[in-house]
Length: 276
Image 1 (cartoon, helix red, strand yellow):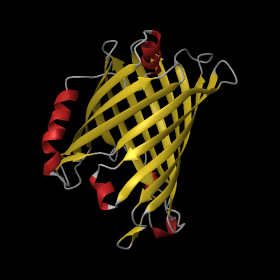
Image 2 (cartoon, one colour):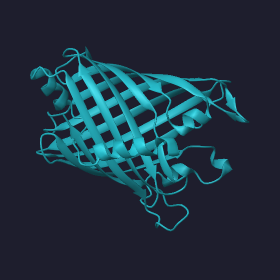
Image 3 (cartoon, rainbow, N blue to C red):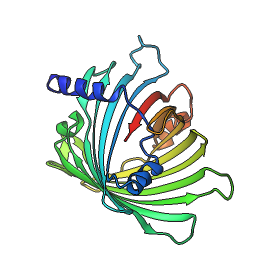
């Protein structure tokens, strides 16, 4: 934990004064149009749950991330990101999060003017303590994303749906008596509405996974809602909430899915992002 203290401080110092909407497609288009293939993004956020600071259930943290990207042409792009987190509760301290190297092909298939498909592949670099404790060597993930422009219903409304499959590569198949995850299949559905300098978005994710022995984990669900504002062409602010739960047999007790939309359970966050 101590060995990454100074490096994370430098990362936070780099990111805190900066901000902008990191996933805006217009930024990638602008970089190509202006013959600027390189892109840079830095963001930082503060998050917490609804419990009091003195509660043993309190969870507060500050995270920071940096992404460097290169656009080869209108379709192909490559990016790498690294992130760190400072936790105020539980296992207090500063920690690295896993880094990712990502490749994306933007215009895989466009059957109609409003509907398009893109594909991506990413490789994980294990930096987090969780990855190190489980002897995770790396992971690969493939994505297939559908994007649907719904301006014919409401100007600025967009729908996305992404199917993802991930394969982990651990040194061992278990840690003690715990079976490790080998495969994960997930889906991410999102709606975004942009109006002027503002945007409003919601995302619903679902996933299920399997161990190296073929045992299936209970499905997991999560949702997030976000309201954002573009302060300048490069800087944006956002507030939001997110929550998750894992489904299991109701015979074992109350279904945690019932608390998925309980406003006392989510994590609330405030983020600032800078894109160049």
